[in-house]
Length: 133
Image (tube, rainbow, N blue to C red; front, top):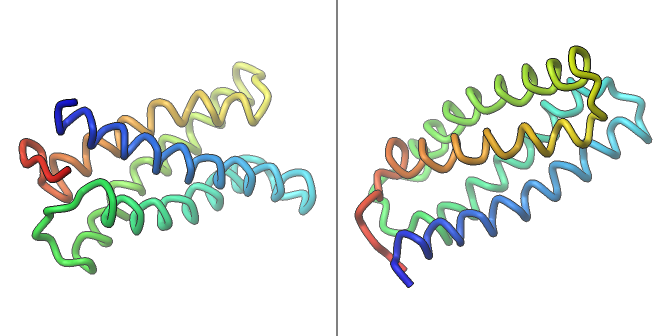
């Protein structure tokens, strides 16, 4: 298997795991703590993306020369754009198009997932073309 494909599959695995946490937190905040679903989506995304950084740095983007602190700051910057995508996408999908909040979050995750991967691959970790298992 080509190393770039392997890296993407690792990223997808980490992303799926942290997205499952994101959905569980979203559901819990909305259903058990009565947090408004747009705010809950933002909170859940923020926690899940921090966990995603640790796992991605360790398992997906091996070979980066970027320091952990600098990488995390860049990761959060990229994630902030993702957070804007999540909250605005959730708003449009739920209030304008009347989708269920969980269905909307899954649809929005597809877009933000690709965004985060490409930005981290090319901008943050700068490992595109460098194939570290």
